[in-house]
Length: 393
Image (cartoon, rainbow, N blue to C red; front, side, top):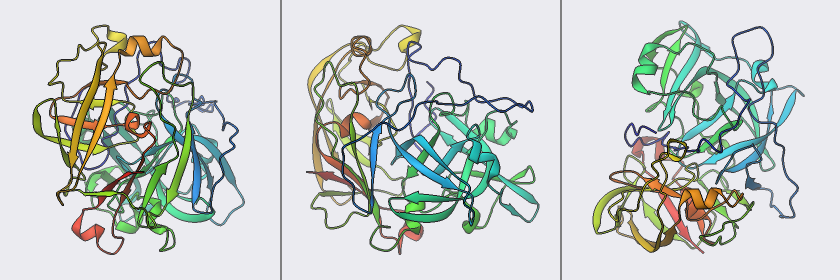
């Protein structure tokens, strides 16, 4: 997996071994036949109780998914009874905006946005590659609230502009195995990171009202200042668990948690393994601890496990510090990916891989019984471009 540099948004890192990749599911085709479904897994039953501003988060039921927290979203054509309940939408506090696979039946029924020189498309980069496709308008249910918001349809069967492929070397990162990404990071829209096109020409600037955006900003004032992920169990370093579930809460409320202010790149700093000043962040969309390997944990040499650690290291500790000087300590262990995957489980608190200069506290950090969230001031975040992470119990 090629690391293309820290980006304020779109940094979600997907690494799946060859043993775990979904077979028989592609990104669709350009033929007239319906594209093959990305993921046929459904929403599992749950005993979790939710408030009006909450949704159940569950381990993805897509084949081959590991450490992937997802929700089921009801997506509708605006002002229409035409809706689809879409499971396996990744909950990602490392990117901004909702992105759906073109293989979903509702995707082709959503109206494409248009401005000036024609229909709007977008290229949006992740560490794993890029998404390219049309920008449409959809109504989305978040808890018991419906918001109408611009959404990107990721379609790897479309030919992306050269400016897109040159900027983000790779292919659409989620289409092989999940149905979409719900990006919950600030600022409100992704115009500072996405490349927009009108009628195929660009990159260009589009009106902010037509740009893909974090739909939480459109919720009522009691719910639009951030999100919390909580209620996940503490998962032992080995053998992990077959599945986990938790809650996504819209609005940070009066949560008494450590608040780590971020810089303009939505990152804080970390000290780990005797190295300070590492670029750090919490990212529910990353499926492991992707960290600077100062402790020389052996990486995997097999191509099927490339990007992961195949050595183990217990009693690891990192200190994350916000721009406001507040720090939290993360204690964790690393276990061999080969050992973990052999268990047949899907959720691991000790899965990780090397990433120079970085401390990416992925979904593994959420499997320690703590509440982790991201917040912002809705009145100023688009002008100041800063927010904060929340951590505690």
